[in-house]
Image (cartoon, rainbow, N blue to C red; front, side, top):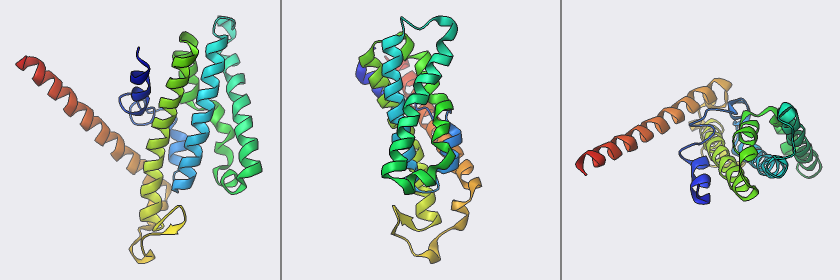
Length: 206
C-alpha cells in the first residue's frame, strides 16, 4: 500500500473517531475547549507514532502468546513520558486533561493500530499510519472542541470572539458532546454515501 494512501486513510476514509468510532471516551470527555482537544490530540499522536515504531521493530521477536501485554507495556511507557512532560512544562493543560492522560494507555485507537497494522508492517509504514491516525483523531476532537468553546464560552484559545450574551451554555454541558459528535458522524456517513453513489453511477456510464 502506498504511504500517501495510508496517511490519507487515517484522516479521511478510515478516521478513527468518525469512521471507526474508537477512542470516543476522551473525545467526549475533554473536548470542552479547543486547547484541551489539541493537547489530547497531540498526546495521542505522539504515543501512536512511538508505539507503532517499537511494535514494528519488535514484531518478529514478541511471542504471539504475550503480544497484547507487550503492546500495553510499550504504550504505557510512552504515555508516562507524555504525562511527565506535560506536568513539567504545561501544568495547566496537564491539570485540565487530568485522568485522561494515563487513560491513553487503554485508548482503543493505539492498541488497534499496534495489533492490526504495526505488528504486520515495516517501520516507515507504521510511522505514516501513526501520523495519519493521530492527525485524524486530532482533527475530529479539535472540531468538536472548537464548536463547543466558541458557542459555549464565546472564546477560542481563551480569546474572546463572541459576546457572552450570544453564547449557549448547553454547549459546555457533557450532553452537547454526544449530540455534536453524533451530527459529525452522520455528516461524514452522508458524504461517504454520496461519494459511493457517484462512483457507482460513473461505473455504470463507463
